[in-house]
Amino acid sequence: MNSADHRSDYNENSWTKGLLTKVKSIVLFILGGVGILIGAEPFVHALEGVAAEIGTPAAVVAVILSPLAGEMPEKISVMFLARRGGEAVSISIANVLGSKVLNNTLLLSCMILGAAYFHGLNTLINPNGLLMFEVYWTGIMTILATSLMFDRKLTLSDGVSLTILYLASIGIQFLVITL
Image (cartoon, rainbow, N blue to C red; front, side, top):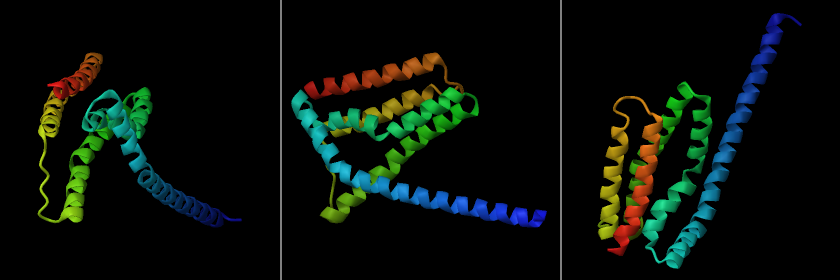
């Protein structure tokens, strides 16, 4: 066997592995989508049940628990990347910020387009006081969290500050519903 035949075998094996990887990725993506479609409604009902049990509006429980469950893959990948250090930490931060951009643009637009599709183009989403508070509070929290990154470094004290902001946010949301 000459070296040209060896390279040909290597290229074919490499191509086959690449194709199998792509097919596997597509199948897993489809299975994940089906899993989300099947699990979304029971998840929402469970959130409503938790909200009823603790006497809190479902929107507040959804704001607190849904991100914890829905973004668990990002949280796990961030932890693994942060353990590696160096460039991996920058990648993990970009992963989190990219997820936020997706959530605040594409997902909100899907909600609005879905409402228009199912209820007509003239559908108006009238936010109640709690929803308006959530929108404004999210903006305030984003500005505060982003301000920690102006020096282009994230330190332990920044991490503690972000954790305190998160816990304060949860506390404030529970206070707002009692007012």
